[in-house]
Length: 229
Image 1 (tube, rainbow, N blue to C red):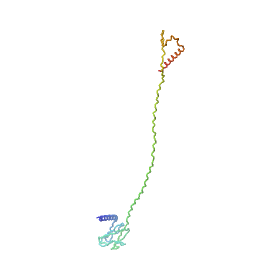
Image 2: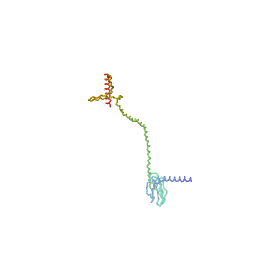
Image 3: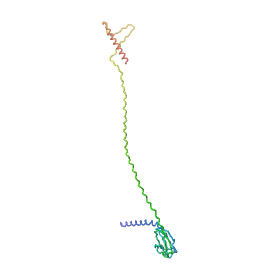
């Protein structure tokens, strides 16, 4: 089984290759027919393309053949028989009947096969040169400027005005009020706390003057204290 399978595969591949090669030939090759009748080649002249085939068929009772000057010929054909020749070279080729000679003539004109247009070779496209990517420029991040902390103004202490107490004149001395002397229209007895000095000869004038001055000073001091209140 191992040997049979490769053989079958090889045969199938060979057959496919032959078919691929034969298909273009069958597609492009053509066949032209010439009838031999009444001792004539009908048509007398045929035009084919290189690679084409010409087939002769004898319809006479007499035998005939197509014979070219260079010895290229068909076999002698009896009535109802046919023979074919392939023409691969371009040119004009005259022929006669190989049995009856110049009595029967014909011509095969072979044109050169059309040259297939060359398959255009695709022009290779130039390989695009990649554009180099721009090198990124490293930019130093800006250093943030130091922001001064807001200075909160210290509260201005309100000027506290201490009430300056008004100077008061304290006096430890108890003012002595001058004795009020009531004046009456009649004779009034005046009480006096002064010691009775009737038996004395009386103070001297100096003592009296000092007493008057002391009384006057005390009276002025009492009036001043009353005004301050």
